[in-house]
Each structure stands twice: as structure tokens, then as C-alpha cells.
Image (cartoon, rainbow, N blue to C red; front, side, top):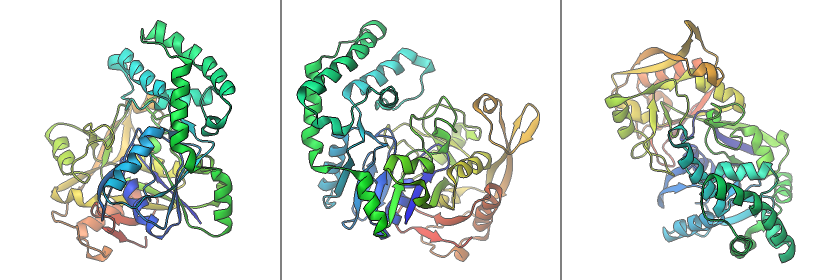
Length: 427
């Protein structure tokens, strides 16, 4: 059985914890899109980790962790992560890398930084990990697949020459930066080949056999619905599809094999990077929520940037769950809100004097103002509670109000950052 774990909002919803938790009873965990531009924070028996490329199931010795063909593979970062977790006592994980995955090149990272620098105040808030230039090259058909590392030297150098001709025009005339050489890029690729060779696999064939054998498979997505390039807050989005539907493509399995879609939803809102964020709050109110939030403050797992904070947004979440095809909602960081007397919830958007509950396109989103309903807080610590009925009444009311508003069943409630701080609920 295949389960997808994805985000409903802007990312940072807690997908890493949910994946780590569900991996305990799974066989295979696959990252199917994105790159090292976002992190999944996990707290378990080994300590606290921020994973950027490795799937969040690497902490179990019975699992196989796969880098799917849809991932923007930064090979040095992948192996740095493996070394970092091993140094903290984690057993060496079983890793497979798709031979069809494409590689983030050093020039992608440079071009990403140069473009943000050129745009200055109108930048996209990139993490400068090379993701947009990488996916641009992938779809322009000038990227490098892992399989190409095993081509003969002449063929590979010929392709490098063709690719860097274009890059050097940009470097020389737009960015005024040093140029690339064929030998430099070839040497980089040979270093990558040496690192990744033992792990390369026909992942699609591997998964075909695994599915036939009835293995339990998790697809782990990065970021969330609002960052999808088709359905998100374009253009302030990422460069690969963040939707569960893409999990089939990015892993190499038939779409009908995805039987369950767990969409992770935060009990309040947060976002890193630029883009429309209707329920955003500011000042002391935001600082307090940021300080108390997450598992040690709301700061980007990759960049360390303070996250933008907001109240729960039913409009964005209902839409985010709908386009994910949600079967189950995992509701996270609920314990954070225990300090509040009252909790505002955004239930609609006012646009040009009219209130809507439908999530609009970006041009209309820019004009949207939040419509709030204020719910009473529960003013108590809920960590350590393991049964839903033992939660304070106002806490249960908050969950059930949101469940009704978004229209999707909340079947898991996370009340702490630890692996087993979770309440299962039959909605």
C-alpha cells in the first residue's frame, strides 16, 4: 500500500514528524520532488535533526530510503547529511538513488544567488539552493541525469560544452561573473559519480516489485499546496509540484497505487519566503507565537530565517486539502496554542467588499482581507495527553470547528514535537 504525506499550506507543517512516525510501520520511504531548499525537522531517540534531502524514514534500520527521479539531487549535500546522522549514532541508512534523478550543479547554486542579488528588493525569497535554475534546465532539457555520469568521456564533455555555452552568456553579460569551463564541470561530475555509484538503482522497477510484494510505501513531499507552481501563490512558489498526484511521477509508480493521502496541517499558520499570506500577523503578537511555536521557535530549517506567522486559515487549508486529494488530515503543533485566551481563525476572505470561502488566484489574493471568528482558548498544557477525549473541551472544540470548516477528517492530532506525541482520532 502506498501512502503520500504532503502539506496543505506554505510548507513547515510538520511533515517530517508524521513521516518519521508512520515510517515505524513502513518498508520504503521516498522523497519524490524538491531539493535541499527546505528542511524537515525531526525529534526522536537519536536527537533533533533537520533533513533536507534524505527521506524522514532514515532512522529505522528496517526501512529503505529512496531519492526519487523527481528530486533535485544535490549530491554533496545528500552525503553530508548521511555523514551528519551517522555521527549522531544513527545506523547507516539503506539508500537508493534513482538513475533518472537529475543533479543540482554548482553553477545552479551560483546562478540562483546571482539572480536574487540582481532582483534585489523584488526577489523571490529564494533559499539560494539552485532549485529554480535546476528545474529550468531540467525542462529545457539541458540538465544532467544521474545515468549520464556513466556515459563515455567524449559524449559527456560534448554535452557539457553545449550547456555551458548558454550559461557563460548569462555569467558574462547579465551577471558579470567568472565563466565556466568544460574541464571544471566534467571534474565535478566525476566526483559526483564516485560518491553516488554504489546507490544508483532503477527505482521504478524496484518499486514495481515492492508493490507486487505488498510492501508499505510512504511518499514524502516537500513544502505545501500554496507553493505548487500550478495551484499555489504563483509566482512566489517553488519549482516542482508539491501535490500528492506528482508523487506517482516523482517516484515512478502508477497513480492508482496511492491509496491514502495524509495532508499535514498546522494548528496556526507560518511561512518562509515571499508571497501572499492573508492571515499573517505582525509585531508582538507574531513574535510571541514565533517564539513559542514549532519545536524551539518558528525559524526555517534550511535558512534559519524567522518564519512569517499567522492565525489558522480555513480558506487556504480547505483549498490545499482539496487539491491534494486528502483522505486524512494530520493536525500539528496544537500544543503551542495553549497560552492564548482567545484564538482567531480566518474563515473567509473579503475581496472588493464581498466575502468568499474559495481560495482565489494571486491577483485577487493580493486584495484579500481576513474574516475572523474568535474561539475561546483552553489555557493549559496538553502535551502528554494520549486520548482525544482527555483534551480540554475548548481544545476539542477548536479541532472540531476547523474540521467542519475545511471539510476533511482530522484523524491525527500532534500535541508535541516527539515521535510518539500523537493522538489518533476517528473523525
